[in-house]
Image 1: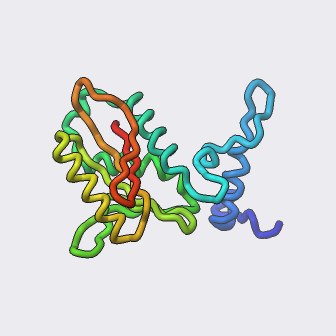
Image 2: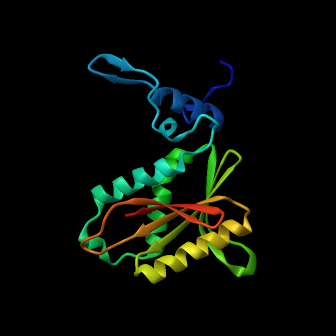
Image 3: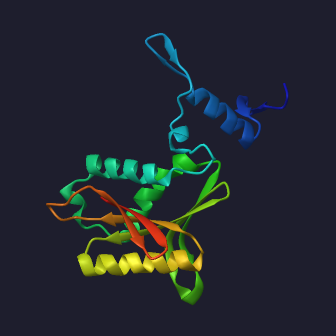
Length: 186
């Protein structure tokens, strides 16, 4: 009926990806707990602003919380590439169906951005760094500033992986000239 469902190998299957996403989103908005229906629950919607943009700061804070809960000292042999994979796996369910993630995007001067997220018509530039001291941190901030300048973006995002024993899980807003950088330490 209406071409929503088809038969494939004697099984019922959703006919196309759009219907599949619509049905999935509808089903995830209803949870049955103790014979009560909780409506309008959708994990993805918790991260969407009224204008349809992604609340990337909240995403980064939740990622920080996730890392705080899951990190173990066994993970000390960690490289930036693994940090990118972890973050992309974390954000995929949030942007899936609407947004896209791009890693190692090449820009002018043969430079590479760590991650670019597009969501509707919005673009988010995210740089990943491992904490190696204040001097290296400042260099990373200037690098992100340059990337934002190339794309004429006002705001950028920085994830700092810190493996020191006395690390703080914190967030900060860094204003550099005409740019704002939101940084989380994980």
